[in-house]
Image (cartoon, rainbow, N blue to C red; front, side):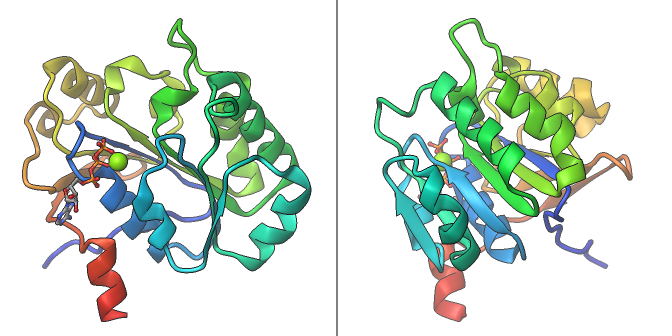
Length: 219
Ligand SMILES: Nc1ncnc2c1ncn2[C@@H]1O[C@H](COP(=O)(O)OP(=O)(O)OP(=O)(O)O)[C@@H](O)[C@H]1O
Ligand SMILES: [Mg+2]
């Protein structure tokens, strides 16, 4: 029997890692669409597909005063910030503000490396969200091209780690290190995804998810 397809519950943190073009954003949209929570999407690369999520609203500037009421009405707030605001420090400050202001909300970051400073460190906002956010039902979905380059908190606090295609052995080793699962040492090709459930200490390989346009056509 095929294993059930995972969902991100309200206190969970998921990390999805894969090279460019491996299908991270496509997988993220599939998870977001299946979630019952409302989500803030930090999208400094301005990836267009998030705009097609049903009931989404684009912010080009961080507007804390409007955000709470907008997020109560709309399922997705897609933050396509300007270069001036899309700095690691400013975005980390946004996460800190979200953490202290909201409960029962998800944060999707595409991509997590953009929150790291030149020295490769994550800021207090991201670390606070990952470590203390569970109590406040703040879930997380972080997309990462190079797992070897991001803070260890992303992995040690994760409920699930997902590997898509990773080119570099160093990146696959990083996921192996945090899961202990040998499956992570191999490449995962063809938009498939290797899903590791931390609590169950179990890895499962899933086939490609439907793209957002396929999901919307069949809705
Ligand atoms: N499950 C899938 N089924 C069919 N096509 C897919 C699937 N996943 C991804 N693709 C296609 O592969 C391409 C790259 O996917 P996607 O943008 O999701 O990758 P990515 O890992 O987010 O890349 P980047 O790191 O550059 O942002 C897209 O054209 C997308 O439509
Ligand atoms: Mg992407």
